[in-house]
Image 1 (spheres, rainbow, N blue to C red):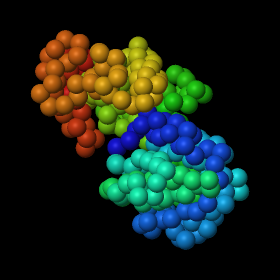
Image 2: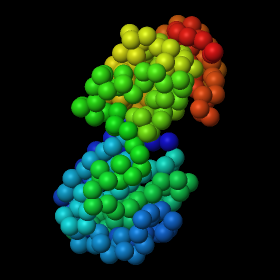
Image 3: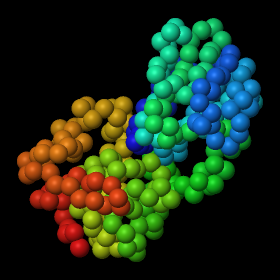
Length: 266
């Protein structure tokens, strides 16, 4: 599933190809992808508008229009954008197609239909309605707030990091990298972590997300000592070359190094 760095990459893509351009028409190719209003109403409201700015909150991307509010985009498991010049290049699984005045198309592609689009007058209202926590990349989100969120929680630290109601934007993939860089076992209980360990998780959260975003969420372009370059069955730890292990945490499969990452599975 696209996580915060992937959505940040989608944001840059949208800004490069769509911001400042006028929408000639919108075609919803599968109405199931539209939430909160009829597909025909979404098409009507966006036609003739310009996309003028973007905003991200965790795994959600918002595009502001010049009169129709904000277009909401959630990408689910398989969503992404595709810009193209010729209509015959429209990709398979295109669920929403934007045609721009002056030429060019932007499609919202989503094979498994787990994402969605909609409109809101205020992104903050949508964020509150969905019960989302602070976006992990928010510059205003500091260690003091992070510590308050996690201190005393009995859940496993990986599950806590993936809880969108606590922090928005981190999923199964980047929670593994954050904990690997902090050298913390994914099944450690949050309330068992020391102040030093909590601070390490926070600092590495910021660093990992910033690094992945700067490198367009390309795992192969991440630093050599990053777990995501090797995160697969049978692979070895990029630091000590111990064989990576897996464990179920919060219903998801965690990859970790039992030698490098402190803690137990208690």
